[in-house]
Amino acid sequence: MSTRTSRVVRGAVAALTTVLTTAVVGLTGATAAQAAVNTSPNYLVVYNNNIENWLPASCADGLVWDRLITYLKGRPLSPDIFTVQQVSNQTQLNLLTQRLSDELPGTYAGQIAIANPGSMGYTSTCGKMKNQQTNAVVYRSDRFTYEAATRWRSDAPEDYDAGTGPCRNLEPTRSSQDRVHNIAVRLHDRVAGQDVSVASIHWPTNTWHAPKCADENIKEADEAMGRLGGDLKIVAGDTNAEPDTAGWWNDGRAYGYRDPIAEKCGSRNCSSAYDTLNSRRIDFLLVKSGNGFSNVATVTESMTGGAYSDHRAVTAYVNY
Image (cartoon, rainbow, N blue to C red; front, side, top):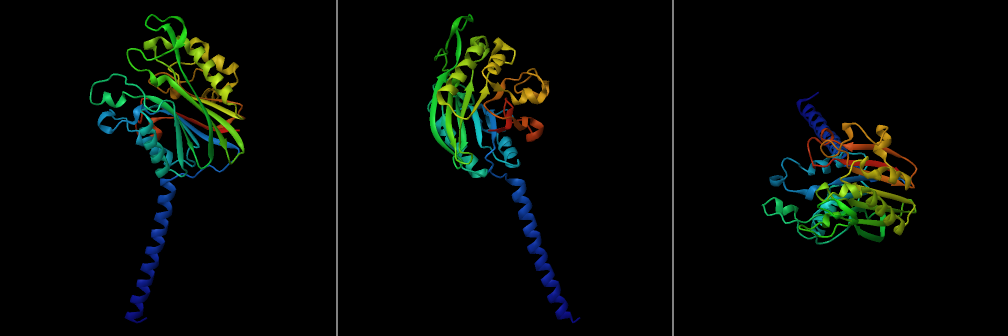
């Protein structure tokens, strides 16, 4: 072979190698970086998380919520529905849905409980970023058509300082409690041809002795689902109450709700592996009128490569 011919062959091989390497790297990168949309009419991919106002790194004490987004990008399917608690306001919800639309397959929209919540009264630089808190339901607008919404406020004892008296709506007190204003929406699933109602709930903390009203709060959540109707009903959020508190979990079961995490762990009182805030399981994804679930998980820090929120997310593929 002549020197000139040898050079031509080597050049062609090098060029072909470059093309193939680029193609393989591009394919690998796309697979690793991005999930796919769920096109099945049989189930929905559902996540819930208290996002703790999605604080910037300078105020987040090492809780990098972007880690959860990165985790979602690496999953086989992106969320169809994502219920969130402690979103600041409509502006932040818009940023969240845009971010999800930009970085995940699918197009996202959301409905919020209160567009401009009152102030919690924090005065520090970082505290001010958590002054507004409320709840929202995020969903894939390329799959669902928004139909209706209902909103209601969570309860605490009438004398919330003493923890006595009947359960009443926790209205703004010495600090705004718009964080406990709940929202539920009815969505029409154009893929499945069915309606799904979804609630994002946040019940008050023990500061207001609110766990005593957990049974009333699950009752009101079920009533909200009843107002909306739907073939499938999902109630998800931060209850600030463990399953044994005030009988609320048993009441939820009596109303027809199933707890995918409890069914996975074999008991309403799961091991610490399923805790969602410190040593408690207080974040739930409850399903009514469904036909089972799969891919049930509590999203731990080891799964996301580090802490992303004070609260761990919960997820399941929920069957119609």
